[in-house]
Image (tube, rainbow, N blue to C red; front, side, top):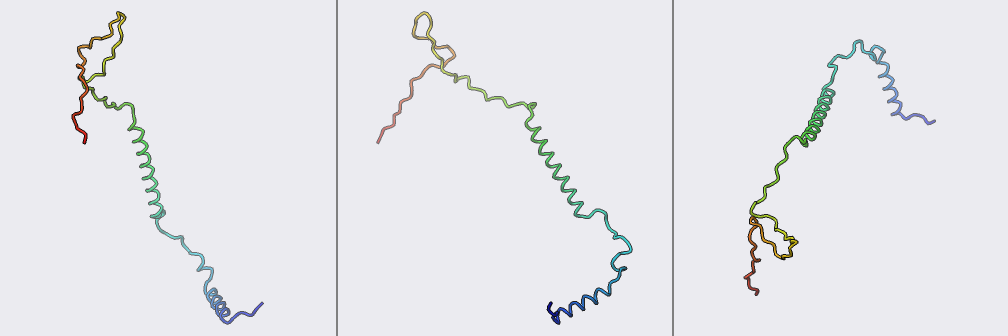
Length: 119
C-alpha cells in the first residue's frame, strides 16, 4: 500500500474529530416528532383520486343514459303529398296495353328542352 497524502491525512483527522463530538444522546431523539398525521401531499393525492373517480363515473353514466331507448326518436320528415312515386303500369288480363292514370297522380309533362346555344 502507498502512504496517504497530506490532504488525505487532514481529512481523516477532521472526520475523526467530528465523530468524537457526537454521542449516543445526539443520535436518538428523546421525543417523537409532532405534526399533522396526514401531510398536504397525501391529502391532495386522495382528493385528486376521488375527483378522477367521480369524473369517470359521471362520464360512464352519461354515456349509458344518453343512449337509452326510452327517449322518443325524431319522426321521419313528412313527404310532400304532391310528389308521389311514378305509377307503374301493370298489363291487365283483358289485353289493353295502356293503363289509365290514377286521379291522384300528377299529369305527365314532357321533359324540358334546352334552349341554350352552343358557341
